[in-house]
Image 1 (cartoon, rainbow, N blue to C red):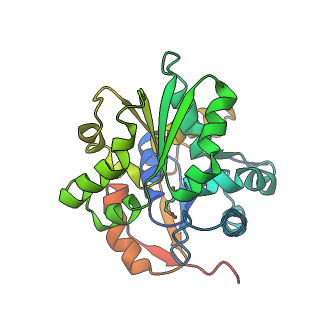
Image 2 (spheres, rainbow, N blue to C red):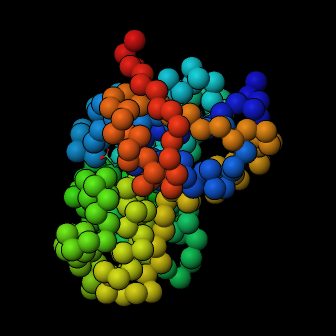
Length: 269
Ligand code: DGL
């Protein structure tokens, strides 16, 4: 039997998923959260689907052993390649993912029939956003662009300097003549460029969808529906698989506040 006081589990390939944790803390400040970042094996975006799936299932097991009441897949690459397997492994525990959540927000504007998606190579090649959008409305045109360099830039904190602007142009100029009305930020790291991206896009009216905010809203709705909202929590516990010091140093950039403790765990034990 799931109870309200159990924590929410959030996981990602590394630090980027803290953008999801931040959105969840903002939407659900009274929830306890357990975050796992697979810093030993990041990045996932350039790995095969099989490898990402195997890693994701190990993390799912870890979170289930911690007694979570819900799992949020913060990583777009994992959502693209392992969602079904995670849902199956989690049994009765509800699982939400950023791709489904981001899609729901994007298709929520019926007159927007041209949607752009940016993500890692893994996410873009999987076409998971395309399929997810078409499951709602097959007449929507989806334009994708992989932006692999944005992950290291975000971690470096280069979000609006000359290098960032040039890199963003390199990737986003692709959308200039596509007529996109909405752009989904399909990677954990991209919310850091949210302020810069509208200056880069030719059409300044393009609606930006932050899938971190979308999944936070979906989590709140789901917990309300299941009568599982916590009113007494608010603790945030972080686990990583390697380099806690680096995680600690970068956390504020993604979470909007500093972390107290970061524990290292090895998943194969
Ligand atoms: N977390 C990944 C994602 O959202 C980006 C970083 C990586 O490639 O592991 O797709």
